[in-house]
Length: 259
Ligand code: COA
Image: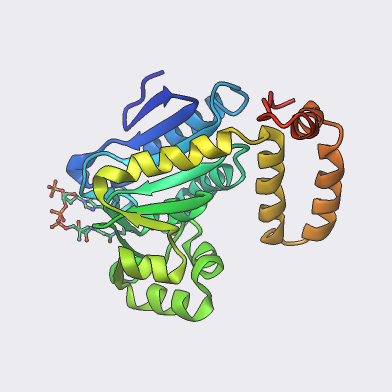
């Protein structure tokens, strides 16, 4: 499947989705966001894909925000509609059944920063910059930034970043826990791949339950501990559990099938 604004590639069980508007610093327009959702949906039940990397084309930007030219003439109803549609896709990423890593290769601003935060975790190149500069435009984040930034960096720092619109560099993002690693640009995708390849040796259904249970912690009205009890029990009915325990007893690596 080919798309207008993203590139997709599957190699060694990893789907790489590359935001491909480098001339606009990979600014996110509505179609582009829908394309990301489509690419993920197409591989949700594909056993040949065990993890996803989301990155930006070029070495300057992951995504420098939502496409300002697209919404500069919007009214409140159109603004709400844009945010609501974006939220659906960002939630789809957050709840995806396989690990999704953001490989942040440059600017991750506004919607770009929010997109990285919808991923399960983030790695950054040394030149990466993060920020929520919407207040400079008379706006606030509309793709979950006011909620997910708090989860990742705490309320005080989130308030500061959201109110000042300041951009932070990769080392500060690392200190704040916004990213897990900072590496040279050329090592960014290899490092993401090596983490996903390690995860791909684990039981896929167990990985899926980890994502569901961690997400439950942040979901209103859901008891995360109860969800964990339920998910823990379900693991016992899987072939992967039998394989994992048998392999342990036989002192060999497990070969999980995701069943
Ligand atoms: N939406 C639409 N276009 C954008 C964009 C965005 N969020 N961010 C960058 N672009 C476009 C620029 O308009 C420019 O296009 P042009 O060459 O056709 O004029 C191109 O990308 C390059 O950007 P430019 O500003 O010339 O690069 P720079 O290196 O001087 O500055 C930034 C880089 C990231 C500091 C600057 O582009 C910027 O501040 N972008 C907006 C960030 C923002 O406010 N994001 C939140 C949006 S809600």
